[in-house]
Amino acid sequence: MAQTGGRQANAIILDTDIGPDYDDVGAMAVMHALADRGEAKPLAVISCNKNELVVPTIEIINTFFGRPELPTGAPKGTAAPDQRRFSEMA
Image (cartoon, rainbow, N blue to C red; front, top):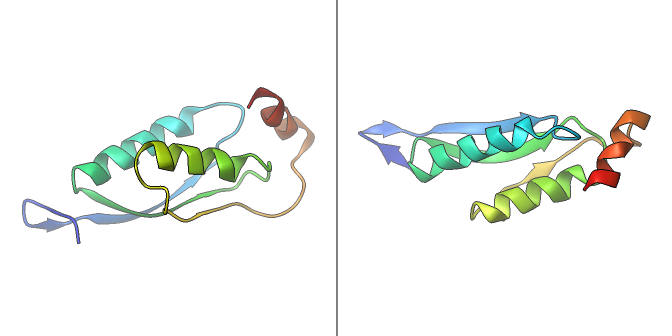
């Protein structure tokens, strides 16, 4: 169990809408930085975005930060037309 200054790390499940904009990459970076400092304990990263590249993108970011085993998830179904552009950009 990660601890900092006698305090227990806060457990986090990060819910992201990662897609055509990448502000959530910053949120993921902050979560991983806090985990590295022992201030957070990531439990999972999930997304509300249905695009088929969302989970692989989250997994790449988690792997970059040394947490490839961190569970990921997203809803099943077809992405809305404006979200399909994400796959063209990836």
